[in-house]
Image (tube, rainbow, N blue to C red; front, top):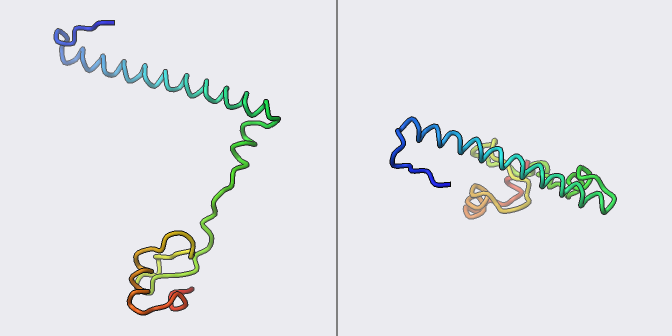
Length: 102
């Protein structure tokens, strides 16, 4: 398809853009539906529904906060994962994790 963009008016170009965006959304929706059908078929081959497969993954729990920033109690940390900057700074200033515990 060849469209001579140089000869289109501003309104025609904007209409073309709008139509192209609609077409892209339609293509994406069709491809998403195809992907879902393929995933459902693959799950069924193993004896599961797609919902069972998706729902059976390990769900990361953030856990309950164990530590709080004394300067700002709304800043908390569970003790898992990377230490927040406020924890690093408190430890560097001589505090211990026990000092920060809730």
